[in-house]
Length: 90
Length: 383
Image (cartoon, rainbow over the protein chains, first blue to last red):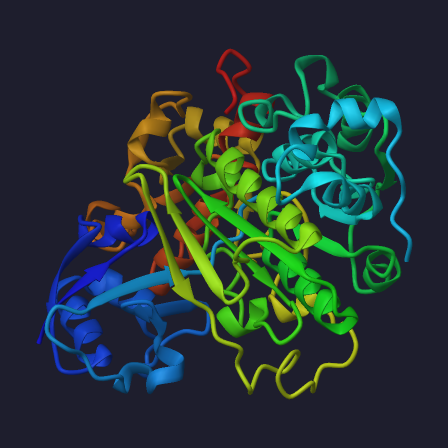
């Protein structure tokens, strides 16, 4: 399924784009697709076990994937996956 | 509790509120009765203090132990040029008294920690998180959950921000959104990464708005939603924040007292720039300059290209930290390399990366270009 991945500025530089098309049937597959194309981005999206970090939240459309099966969450055509890492500036 | 009455002067001062149907006299009396605690009088704390004072919040508390620095003035509009060198608390007191003398201000010129947080927080109805580091954010969250006080959250980085309201009754908390902090040093601070001066104005005024809505009991709160602000794209969007039944603070209630947040976040220091301990070999600028003059070392500058235009090291190889691993072949294994950046944090990471790649003759320039300017070349500007 084609979906759009949205990155915040802090990660966008690792892919040279704030948004791009990714493909996969689950959120984990979308992340794998992005990680394969941009290895430096990949290490910021998932740990060495291929799992999401506790300090990077993924939104499939406007839902936190933690409550919908994590990286196993099913993706539909045209979904939007937004990466929201923790920031602390004030 | 009986709401306080308004004097004639206050009625005139707040007249634009009083004629708003959703505020009115009763709302203004609620604002006067409200007790709001601001954590930090910096970028976010500045618009918060200014607008909440002007709006007539009756009692404001501020926790901050920082001194006004000239680099703060680009965004911290609570403080002025004549305040540089004085405490932010003193500067805030002066400014708030000028904006609204009816505000009763309590100041806490101390680092917030697990020992004092509950004692301070229990005197307030709402806590507003305008801090600049992860340990304090988790501390503020947990203290608010334990006491049942709403936490109006805001956070910024470069051109982007986040805002929400946590720890309302039945609402999610910060740990529901981010169960654990990133490892120290992964997310640059504003001092390292920069921040658009207007951005804390945008996010701080959103926090002030949420605070006033909570006090008045009007509108649609950000509780249960996270507002994402992209100043460059001019995009605002909200996503859902769900209460996590497994959250150790607000879900399972495993955490019943405040913990050691420095340890939880893996960092030994709170406030300002995170001073992360990397445990790598170091060299002082004075020693480095002497050895550089004899041709004994090479300096590798890992700052970004736009920073090199502000202040420079002599005779460097410039490779931004993000490209170091890919360009490692450009560096000699048989020379003493001194890694350098602005303050010594990124270069310490660079030393670790080179050590991991097999380099043994690498050290970190302690204090970066800021200390280099102090010790070696005062002709250059600091940033």
